[in-house]
Length: 84
Image (cartoon, rainbow, N blue to C red):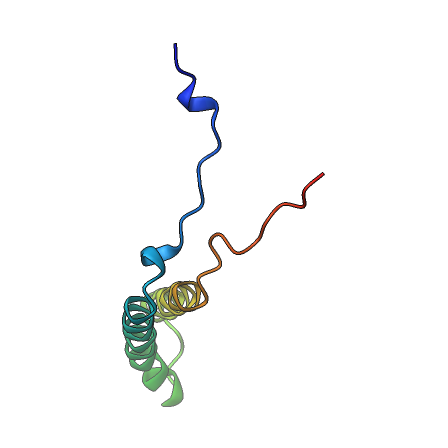
């Protein structure tokens, strides 16, 4: 009987290590974050009090920006455990 569940999963790089795929999708997400952020920021600059929708849009833009940075940095599989 095989114990496949007991084996640790092998860490694969995000997008298979394709630099152009990571750059294109990361830049697209970053531009989307800037576009989403631009909407409520314009209303706040005019002196209007922030609404819940504006706060939700800014939070969404921050999440998109963070996702873009993770895709561009590709931290998956870079850290190795020290050998005992």
